[in-house]
Length: 463
Image: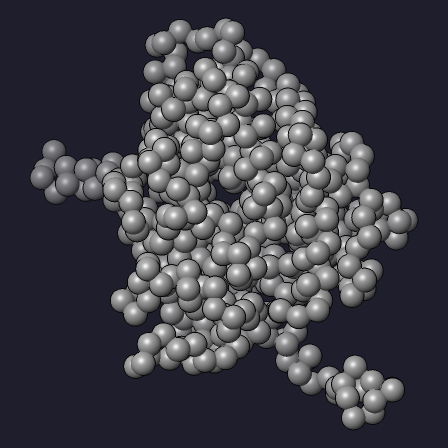
């Protein structure tokens, strides 16, 4: 065989090791170029990690969608109803009304919430993983758990199979489009919309929904906040925690040996959120000038992008190492650690609920299974976290586990190759399609074109 043929063969066989990173970098450049936003990403040389939270918390960094080209892309992914999605509503009375409702639905006694999460987890695991061992994708495995749990919070009743199927189908469609591994299927999403509309019209929601929203907007609010973002984010968070445990057996066995040690399990969650924050970038639009120093001002209308991974990598020894024990020596409040955002600028409404119910769910998983995985662990986990589950009371022979580990590693390499190419092509197409649709831009253009409503009692004032 000639040297040239050997070189070609080596290049082809080695593509899973070098091509995906090249494609990811190219995809980032394509997104930035096609999207056309001149956003500022922090921390940077202008605003370092020491001032990251200060700028993030600034009262003028409170715009959400109006005035940012990248809003069109987020609205495209989050349809239907992105205009009433809590994370994308502009500041004002309507946002306040929606935020209060969300907090009411997510509230409850800690013991009851934990017990409900444990029941849902146990039920789904016993239904979907019945054998001695199973290869699963952790994000997909967790979606029915949180579909049932959040349905229970909204409707205060057990989740019927039809509703679970619709919620999971909708959430999977959203997350695969967000990861650029699949196109949107709006007909699939519309089936959940129609189901929720029937329930809202019949008055079957167990809570008073925001009075500032129309009936259709209330439907979209429930769909977007709880059965889109809620299910997706909780499933991704659990996938990250369980995959970290599957890759770090010493941590896994310490948690399994003493499942009631809330302190250590809390450290595991903190370290997982630090290394794999659910939000990559949080963007805000300035509604007034922000003075950084005597020489620098961020003008009104600036698009500010706050990078959680970059911020979470500062202020730690060996930030690339997964080490829950670091939290025994430091406080999460004092560290560069904002897994749920900053309190002064629209934090995640589930900041209290999520760690509470996740601990309950982790205990249920580890009570039944040992976890093992050799796949890559990145913040976006586009592979949905492949993992081997083995019954604790019926372990597999060691050589069987080794074979599965090798299979997972090899499959992950080759899947990463074709997936990165798919993401490049599909992602670029979706960015272009979102720019064509201009969902956010068209919405705000229509608002600006509407004549101001006048308050009858005071003709010189707007209603």
